[in-house]
Amino acid sequence: MASLISEFGYWVTSIAIISSVFCAGAWGQPSEKTSAFFIFGDSTVDPGNNNYINTIPENRADYKPYGQNGFFDQPTGRFCEGRIIVDFIAEYANLPLIPPFFQPSADFINGVNFASGGAGILSETNQGLVIDLQTQLKNFEEVQKSLTEKLGDEEAKELISEAVYFISIGSNDYMGGYLGSPKMRELYHPEAYVGMVIGNLTRAIQVLYEKGGRKFGFLSLSPLGCLPALRALNPKASEGGCLEEACALALAHNNALSAVLRSLEHTMKGFMYSNSNFYNWLNDRINNPSKYDFKDGVNACCGAGPYGGVFSCGGTKKVTEYELCENPDEYIWWDSFHPTERIHEQFAKGLWDGPPFSVGPYNLQELFWSKEKKRMTIADIVDDPDNPIAG
Image 1 (cartoon, rainbow, N blue to C red):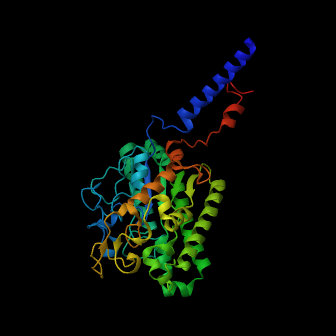
Image 2 (image 1 turned 60 degrees about the vertical axis):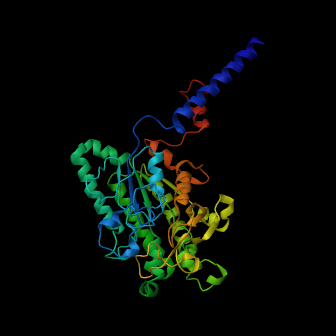
Image 3 (image 1 turned 180 degrees about the horizontal axis):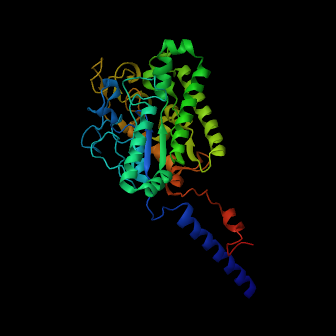
């Protein structure tokens, strides 16, 4: 009887040790300072950089009803009625809102957002009207120099190496840069064009890696043909169908990016990344809105014409008339191209602490709190020869 009690006590102690390791380490948020956050991309993550450049009204969102839900005092330049995905990620990481690069007197110690509405991976996409990815990388160099001057070389290098780099870009290369460009469609078959876009994105990742970046997060492309603007362009629009050509390009891009990331993980020491299938995730909500407590997965809350697909939200563009829904929380789409705050929040949460089968090989929480440590499993703990409960 005594031996049974002793053995039972041993296993209780073992389980307690394992539990304490997991609660304090792998799944908890340590008390140490979190990583900085650097963001590159297009309108999906632009917090207002385009407010400071000379561009067309379609590439700006610094007017009502953008930002109408009251979180911000006024429109900020975010293409949403409220916050966007990187705002929620910053909150989960215990960071303040990450400032746009062009914001006067911004403090970059917690990170910088370089994104620009309308930007593409290719410099030719909306050239002269946006801050393309190559220019965003040059702006990062300026921030890197500024941090070195402020913190010193060693501390700045540590901040850069521990930072998380979030990239959300590519949609404009396919919607305007390819489908909207007869010249590009004549020069490139779809496969060749996707290869060119992915090649340029891969080089951008390598540049950030060479500058010290090690931890990367990616927002893959959505089903582009199902955006209200492109759905309205579909010859079968009366049937409510998505523009399949655009969807096919998005899928090809996502598949190619996944392959590239797996390759980089093996060829670049210390490279860690978080990626997920945003295409299927959003497509399920578009097709089954009620399943996720939405009422409409097809029409834009703010816009005009079929599906709200005429990009007139705010009345500042060529078409000035627009309709505005009463409750954006019931909609997948805020305007003709961009999702509502609820979608931004839900996907941010999924990327932050989603399980391995939906986000991988790391989720963003693991990237922000890690010091280049791999995900720990119970087997790792039990098999560790230095562990008192192993063997």
